Image 1: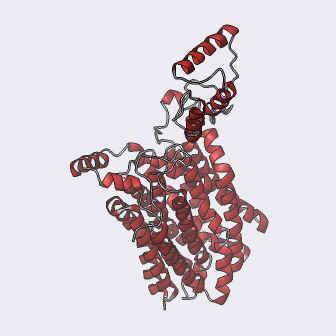
Image 2: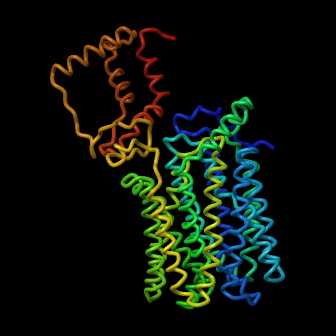
Image 3: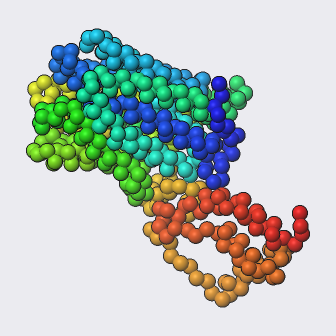
Length: 511
């Protein structure tokens, strides 16, 4: 069945949206990620308590989380390469269906080993977030990609404001109920994607190329992996360790330190998600404009690790919750920048594979994190896991500093950071000053423009007001900041249709 939404031809970005697909398709991606994250966060607060109903230790809970990371680490590259072969849409739908079935199996587990097996099986299909990032990279123009990636990173945070609280409440009806709801939501999201999500036009166009050209491009792209991609993957391992520790140990630490039950843990997750959401909406893009993509990711790693450690060692309920929320600010800064950074090193023929390489590295870290932190929690469930997480987060930040970004020539990287648009206005200072011309300058420009309009048969004398209006729309105002003024050509694209109508109104001949 084909999608109900019809994409544009590859290469023709919409002048208004900067997309190859209808904007409704992007909303479908966001809804899918929302439902998938909502499903996962409904079960996350209750999963340790559900697992403990089988009379297991904290270390066994760590293995439970690690089993997901183990299978996802080795299956993510396969699914990524598969998305380059069969399409982004098919892999995304298959991942949602597989995750839904696996979560239903977890909810019906009769013992810990069945739960462990189903949890491992769910990791096989852990390609939803990765597929969404690849899809956006395919269909968004370079001008709008950072914005949409930032919005995508905000969607899980929005889901987290509802999921943990719902999971905590549902756990009162049975510890397996949140996991059951997790599976049902994943299957529902798969159905929506099947009906409404079109295939990536970039992928379709790449597959329709002559086989010889495709083979040459694929061999070239696979053999010539930029060193920066490998550095990013190495950094992602430690990022994954830190993240896996945080996910698996938060409930355990809050229980040991503050005596929180699943309901209190759920609402604590909601507060942390609100902090992440606020950062994604209002903070990440502004920090990126000021310090750049890479530095934002580095800052996020340091910020997240430091406040996670403070959350564990500083006493008090509210101080613990506040530091946990601040640590999520760092997670948001890192997550909102990573996808856009990686996109700069890919093309439609290898994008799925490169993103899968990154996901593989991240999942290796997520595999190691819960296992190591689970054993540390046996000795000290409050401090040791978070000290370990903070160290790994710092190592990830240090490695990330070695990444060579292709955005600008090296001489320009410290002067201005071009976030959107297609111009770079090299040599611009921190702010654009108003430039005034002399009387001679104005006269020379007027004579040139008047002569040009006459040659091209515009009635610029009798219809001067229309000409003024046309020029006003033709030349959008530039922002005063050097980091923002690069949107000029993008604004011109948005005014193309209106400009054409104005031109026709002032031409000397009727069409």
